[in-house]
Image 1 (cartoon, rainbow, N blue to C red):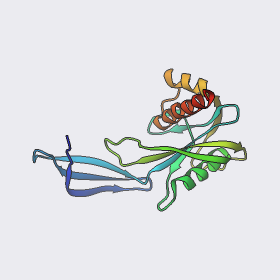
Image 2: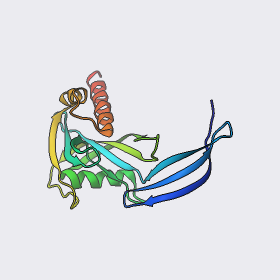
Image 3: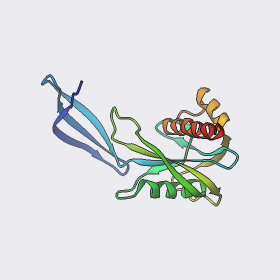
Image 4: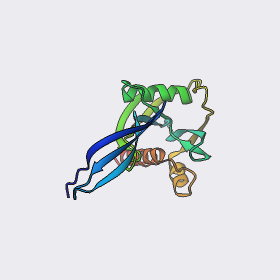
Length: 182
C-alpha cells in the first residue's frame, strides 16, 4: 500500500536550542484529515569506540528525560551545516578525550520516526589514542570500558537501555564475529 500523508498546513509551536515542535494537519488517503505532532531535530552522530582488546568506551551520564543514569556511546547533535563525521570526531574528543586513528561509517537510522525527523549517523572508531575529556559545561560524564560480550549481556539484563547504544553494540558484535570467522 502506497499511502502518502499530504501536508495541508503547518503550525510552529516551539523553537528551541535542540528541538523545534510543529503540528501538521494532514490529509489521509481516504480524504479524512488528522494532526501530526512533529519534533524537528538537526540529527546527531554517535560513535562506538572499540579498543584493541575489544572493549567499548562508554559514557555514563544522568539524563533528565529518563530520570536516570544511562550508559551510552558518545554522541551529539549535528550543528547546522556540520558534516556528521566532523560531529562525531568532535563529540568523541569532548566527551572521552579520545582521538581515533580510524573512523568507519556504519549506517544511519531514524531514532523515533513516529514523532521526530531526527536521523542518527553511526560510526565505529578504532586505533584509539586516549587524552583528557573536555565535556560541555552542563555535562557530567563518567567514562567506562566494557568488553563487547559483557555489553551484550548488559542489554539483555536491562543495564543498557539507550537505543543508539544497543544498535551500535549489536552492530560491532556482528563486525567482530565476522572478522573472527575469516
